[in-house]
Image 1 (tube, rainbow, N blue to C red):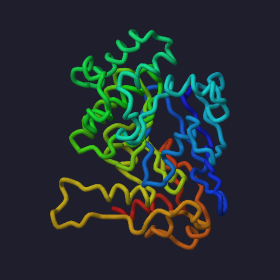
Image 2 (cartoon, helix red, strand yellow; image 1 turned 120 degrees about the horizontal axis):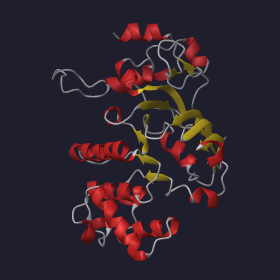
Image 3 (cartoon, helix red, strand yellow; image 1 turned 30 degrees about the vertical axis):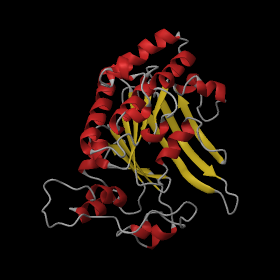
Image 4 (spheres, rainbow, N blue to C red; image 1 turned 45 degrees about the vertical axis):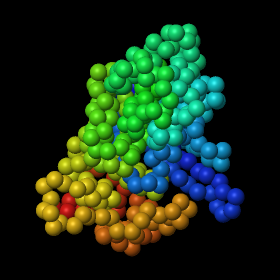
Length: 333
């Protein structure tokens, strides 16, 4: 039984003027205990809204449909739970590392206050017990001199240390699932590597299942077992990470991978880019959303949305593209 089984998740936002906007459309995935899933795509692809919907954190004008079963039928559907039931899960069994550590922490409260509040709520610990547990977790994420620094304010930490604090806060209640939303954004490459290594150790040593949201394919390659590529609110390709990196079969995935700079590249080789920009919400055409930017697109692509189908050549892999796998692979060789 999957730890989390999401099926046909859709998110819609109403607007004061104009028709509703479909931010996420029929996204499905499963997450087993101890596994790692990378959700990747450009800004506006629906990555963050997908997980915000799972945790009941959408803005007031958002609505959600589909199912998200936590631990099967017995655990319940996250999308239909009331706030009281969700509060027993989020921050407890499912931890979240929010996108920006610079703003996610309350600047007016010490790290101790922000960490112990969760433990006192979910674990019913005394203040002293909660402080001891918080220091232990700060040590786990390698905050130096944790017993002293727990009494400091967020502005007294560097960006990398603030991100470690965010991860520590998500781990306080020993969650089964850790959702990390762009955990390496705005960090230099050395600190990025340290954060990814920390997440890898948590997965390996504690068996924590991880959902990593990012636009960086390099980060995904270093951590994830499975990759789900999103574009304009839809899943366009999903596969085992090694297989996807070895032979991507959706033009958008190929574009993302080609845009990665490589140390072996010739100095004179220009950085490859995907032409154009992602469509604005509510301005997606009738066909494949990627068609205006795709060199493989034909009339069918511009008029008909491709379904997400299983690849015949790779078990468990899915893609949403009208062009045959063989044609794509032949063209990119």
